Amino acid sequence: MNPVLAELHEKARAVLDPVHYDFFTGGAGDEVVLADNEAAFRRRALLPRVLRGKGNSPEFPVLISPTAFHKLAHPDGELATARAAEGATLVSSTASTVPIADVVAAATGPVWFQLYLQPDPEVTEELVRRAERAGCAALVVTVDSPVFGRHRRDIAHGFHDLPAGLAAENMRDLPGTTGLRKIEMAPFTWADIDRVRELTSLPLWLKGVLHPDDAVLAVGHGAAGIFVSNHGGRQLDVVPAALDALPAVVDAVGGRIPVVLDGGVRSGADIALALALGASAAGIGRPVLWGLAADGEAGVRKVLDALRDEFEHVLALCGGQLSRDMVVVRC
Ligand SMILES: Cc1cc2nc3c(=O)[nH]c(=O)nc-3n(C[C@H](O)[C@H](O)[C@H](O)COP(=O)(O)O)c2cc1C
Image 1 (cartoon, rainbow, N blue to C red):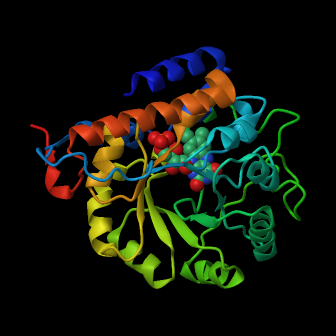
Image 2 (image 1 turned 120 degrees about the horizontal axis):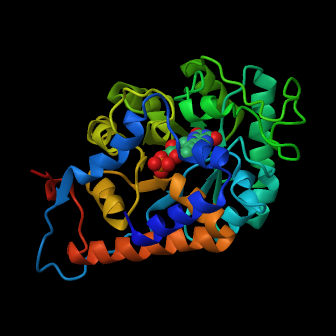
């Protein structure tokens, strides 16, 4: 792990209420997938090319993945994350504790809206309209959550609602969503994706694709891109690590749309491995929350700066080039 991230993680553990620390850090079930997401990077090595000069450095290929309830980490919540997200696209959660319009107003770079489809299609439509009015540049529909994963840490703590004064701000005034933490899930289908497609001209990404056949369906249903993601090990605790699922999805998509790798990325080398295996960018979840909890906006900046600096260094050591033939299994 990048040492800056490791230090911020320790600081976050020290300052956060243990219940909230466990909410941010934990996974589903036995947390097998949570651990495997990181371990999958350690199972691989990069074979650098030599004598290639500097190569062409891609722009910082990182997105801030959508995570809920940033005000549990820091009083400035998503506003701090948005201010810090320079150069990295911020994917803002349906379950943010700041309304999407305020997130976009505070942001220094592009903001995408992560959408949980709602059982009431009018509520879904209103969320899409809010994202459009706010000026979001894309929608990211999360498709791996027909029901919530079972997080044993949260169950043990009895953590199932936000503290008084905090709310899922995008939702709380919508019909049928009176509760504080009322993000409804339901078993949606590809027809629901088509309906969102027809609702808006915003590029529509799908997050939480693991099966190559679903990646092909995503292309057919007009997705602008996909996130290969297991929700950071928070949904089904028997799936492959996100990195292990990536190559088959990249092959199935065949370059028709970009594929983001999300889950377990903790260093510049991890970003390089994801890109070498065909990802267009890496999504970062928990490390942003650690930075936010440890030091607010400055902490999120530290996370992004450390990853940017380390990625550029790794890339330079690789001759400025990343491709699948450069990835080998560590023995
Ligand atoms: C505390 C927490 C809250 C999350 N909330 C959301 C969410 O609201 N919507 C969503 O699509 N994904 C959510 N995720 C999943 C992240 O977008 C991302 O897939 C995951 O964190 C990536 O793994 P990483 O934490 O190892 O980087 C959440 C993850 C965490 C840790």
